[in-house]
Length: 542
Ligand SMILES: *[C@@H]1O[C@H](CO)[C@@H](O)[C@H](O)[C@H]1NC(C)=O
Ligand SMILES: *[C@@H]1O[C@H](CO)[C@@H](O)[C@H](O)[C@H]1NC(C)=O
Ligand SMILES: *[C@@H]1O[C@H](CO)[C@@H](O)[C@H](O)[C@H]1NC(C)=O
Image (cartoon, rainbow, N blue to C red):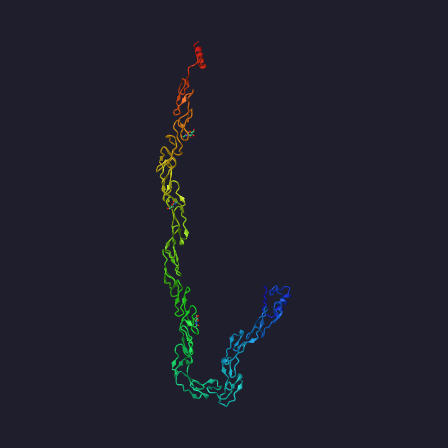
């Protein structure tokens, strides 16, 4: 462990140098005392020098110390001035000359030690005692030379006391009721509150009394000789008529009774102690607690009862609908779902919770519970925030009802009205579109020539036999017949095909369903087939 050597200003530079040199000549010595950037030999100036390189000489006198940096003087007790050149003024002594001499008979004291300089005739540490009988003068060093039995003035050494004084050293005034030379005159002051001058015997009123016979006490507010001084007591303090000192009432102290008892104390001389909790203050006079707002009880230990607040819990809260009241300020904390200074307002639509500060999230006109914010969905919707419409096939409050629709139709999630597919209508979608109509709710009219019906879903025209085309307005072309002209005619030999029925009308002697038989009259030559048949008939008959 390192030894920290602190080189204070007061340590002698010789010692410092010794320690430093000691460190410098010890190869293993740790020198924590050396602040690294400062040369060891300039760490302290020699006595009487100052400045960065100790280049200045101090100007402090009378043992004053000068600052290492600035040269400013720090004086020894008994001296003041920027160079400590001045001794304390008469009657003062000590550091900064701030102490007052404590010597009797106005004696001065030593400006450094405060020891009293006694004037001639006085002795004791405070010069409070007269010289012993038989001695007098400076330091009581003189011996009296008065005839035996004659007193000697302790100050001057004169034999026999001056009028009004007595004692072996003439150090005392005459006893009350006597005055004059050797105190052998009897005072003629008759009143009980009168004083007699020890020298002249003149009568005067004692402090606190006045009047011809000094029978009257000073009037209230006045004191002293002839009641000429005005009392200075405040706050109902009672003034002593003789000295003017104040007798303070309970709760006040101080010479003029203008200091109230410190916190927690009360009564006569602030001697009693009171305990007032929760920042309550104690009445300095009675000691009763004056509680802070929000508290009550003898020691302010109780909070205000519910419904009251403020100083003394005297004010009545106005927090409605279950709102809580701050016992200090009366400010309301509202129950969920209420707001306003008195919690008088229910949350407006779309708001909920504490102070109605949250936004409701319900969709599709769902209503929001102003306390919890939970959503109540309109019929046809469900989900935490009513975000879903009822699934196909269901409707109504909480989607509990099933659609009653035919042909697999779904229904409106709110009303339950059937939503018919194309081609159907009726309350339950039970009916196909009437002829001539098609599409959504059968609201579209077919657009077909004549009275041709159309497909109830697509509206495509269903053409009668012999007609075709998008509107059935086109006749079948040759060789076609039937509804929408879908069939092929079979008429041969230029037979004409009926476009509606497909019947053939034969020409030139042709007959048969397809005009395939007969034919026009034959020329002389048999036709090859007939000749062949004829030859065969001849051959079999041979
Ligand atoms: C008494 O004390 C009060 C409060 O400290 C002060 O304002 C007032 O000046 C004092 N009065 C006298 C006469 O000192
Ligand atoms: C919500 O209510 C308003 C007014 O009543 C209405 O116009 C709107 O269509 C409703 N919206 C829904 C999704 O029900
Ligand atoms: C009628 O015939 C036309 C042309 O061949 C065809 O495009 C159409 O789909 C047919 N209509 C029906 C109802 O079969």
